[in-house]
Image 1 (cartoon, rainbow, N blue to C red):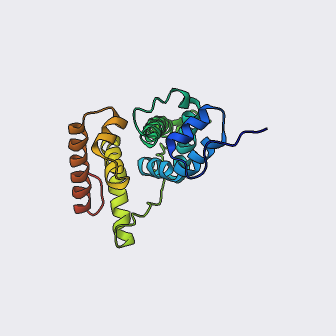
Image 2 (cartoon, rainbow, N blue to C red):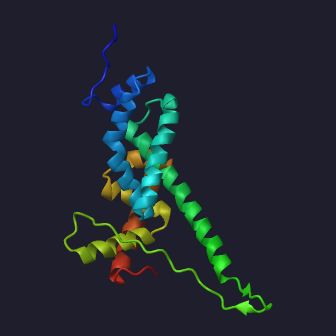
Image 3 (tube, rainbow, N blue to C red):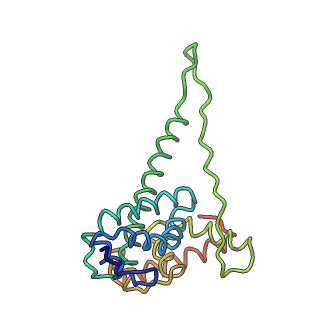
Amino acid sequence: MTSLPRWNEESDDGELVAAFRTGELGAFETLVRRHQKAMLNVAYRMLGNHEEACEVAQDAFVAAYKGLANFRGEARFTTWLTTITLNQARNRIEHLASRRRHEAYSLDAPRRDSEGGHDEARREDPPSGAPSALDLLETQALRQRVEKCIDALPPDFREVLVLRDLRDHSYEEIGTMLSVREGTVKSRLFRAREGVKDCLKRGGEAP
């Protein structure tokens, strides 16, 4: 006789994790459905590109699937999963920055033509990305400026702003996710908010 699963769609994350560890793979599918929108949002806020964010979120869930056996439950599952998503986003940011540097070098370097001369150097056009909306703001133009200012922040400032102001995590949770002290979280958050404020004063232009 087949035993009934020890979880359902209303089970808390801890119950779903426990069920998954006993071999009930559907429990992990429920975790994915429950948290994929939030993780995609975190990834998008870090990357500013929907396609890249989708890949990061997918990679985060793959990493979570592989690492769930080692999840000790010392923090909430969402805290652990968000940490994985942030790490994947950082890796993608570094990869994209490295690729842009390589492409810029290749495009800026003079090319020899068939007669031994040089073609005029070309520069890479920066990729365009439509900014997303922040639902709490009133006008589309202001939303775009705020989004642009957030994207211009250094990654360590951007992530605390995303986690605190957009995802409403506590200072303690953010400190756990980033492996830093709460005082560091508060300092980075203050500087991130000031950075956005200064950027808005300049009309949404980065310094």
